[in-house]
Image (cartoon, rainbow, N blue to C red; front, side, top):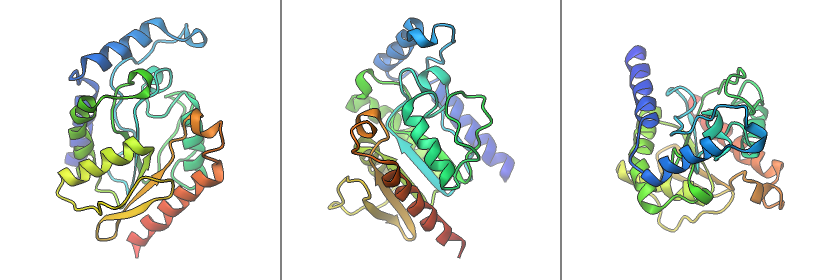
Length: 233
């Protein structure tokens, strides 16, 4: 059973990496990888869709917006190589979801603990704003990720991830309360003893302005740990 599960998970990652459904996003990823940022001129950019991070057997699923142009689009690993990743992996390490707080490089020994990271869109979008059709094209990957991981807790980072995750859960047949709106700390259930939490995205726009602080971010993952540990009881 474990071997079949791992095979299905790896096959999903391969399909994500080789997806070419969104010409605008593929072109942007390649363009950024060719032009590069001055600080990374000596590096070879990933420049294509970024797969999920973690193994399918996990009780926490984190859903981000999309790979950063010079972060995950460069390194090939979710939330790696930019300030958003620095914030996320520090928070995960502090709350027991990662073995270390490294975020700079893909090959740094980082291991997620009972956690998987995915995103609403797997390609870096211009201006960090995917179009509706691009979100729709990527939604089957999110639905399949949800099916394979079967998480106890889902943490969404930002309003786009919140909406995309709710839509994916509805595609699976789950009924969610329509009155639930995105806000930092929002919490709802999507099945018995299954939770959906919302956080502001750890983007520089939010962290540099103080809209999102580290204590605020920690509160989300502390709550996620509390809820997932209820599943042990």
